[in-house]
Length: 572
Image 1 (cartoon, rainbow, N blue to C red):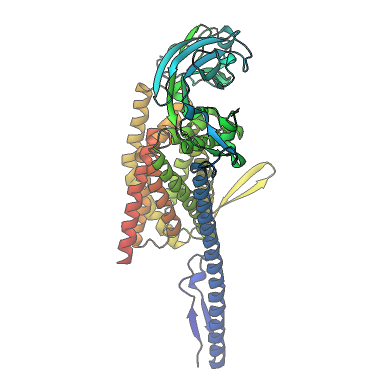
Image 2 (image 1 turned 90 degrees about the vertical axis):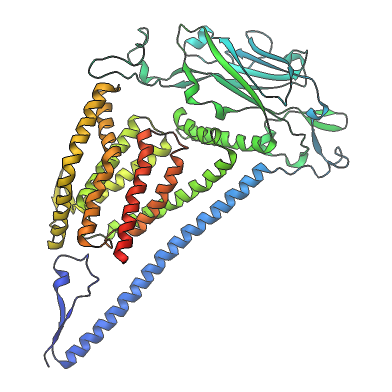
């Protein structure tokens, strides 16, 4: 009996070129039976290995999802502990015996609010201070907003600091003569690098007045003193009775206690809302400036919101200690200040799921490309364009000094796209001393067919895309002001990416159409990225970012919907 040639298993498509054309041959009856038995054993072993691999991957994903669920549950519990404070259990009986701490505001004292400024961070008497605001009949239940002019001392004009001392004391008594006064200190200045001046690159016309001649040429590279034009005050107005044995640590540092008879009282809790100090409200202090406006606003605050706000301010301060600039911290402040508390809670859950999907998409994308050996059905031009556009977007965000919340993920994405290009071009790098040498692998017949479809799609796109990009760059050069030629170049590239970048996804769609299949695409990673795309639509209205970057989030939705249609059509 003549031997038969068994074809190579059809599912092996990513092997070396020519491997799928070989067959497993057996000659003779006994040899054929042995070969078939060997193939069955090999198939069984392969299936077992595949099952173990899938089980390990599934277990890892389940572990990640489990850790995520525990993290969300723990965060909810912590947030509940912040918002809800357990009152003193003995408040209904003898509070003094039970160790309760009573609110001094329950006595309804007549209070006065005074705001002073000084160049020193501490004061001991009524010397070298200026009174800028005095509210004699201060009602803690009524909100107000007043704008006053503050004289700027010479020391502050020379890149110095100015402090505000806010006193809450009994009416008719000077603060330093009142033993039951409370006060808090806040700097009215901060240091930042000024935003570079923008000019028309062809005419040299500036958008603002020229920089003062007295400044040094490198002044824009050095932090200068900026004026905080807003001061937001709060007083906790709830008549809440604390348990003296378990005072919340966050509120405790704002509390001042006095003994009145047999009971302990805490004086009014005065709080400065630093989250309301936004970068958009800052003003550069020049040497010629003698007065600056200061808007003082007041509103009451509940205990739960007070504790939450304290924790958020501590979190922003921690970010600054880790190297976040004032502008980066300002983006975080905007999330808390400019949104409703209920919407803020929704934002937290959305951000948590965004983090989970980011990780899963990253894991599946890296796993897909790590195992990728063939570019059959994959548009190389789309991979190259995605890499170029990601790098350009990263450079644009860097040039615009965008928040690190947006910049860091963009930088990581650029590195991953560069690695994908290396895989797509089958590139290897060999070092000859300090000089790298690039080598590119060869494509098989199926990959060359894919490249033909890819080149055909790009040919038609170039007729539309290049004139639009060149025309847009010329228009912006004539009508828009930029900091430098580099800024114009990056903005021209990124405007082309944002406005017409989705067109470069068309080659992959064209390849899918020609091959009548989308099975070669990383659908797991696509799915997770799609979830994040819809989440990005929400964050586009929360986090400050360039308008073009915000519109690009919605553009990605359209591209993914087309992919979904092709996926649905492929199943029909």
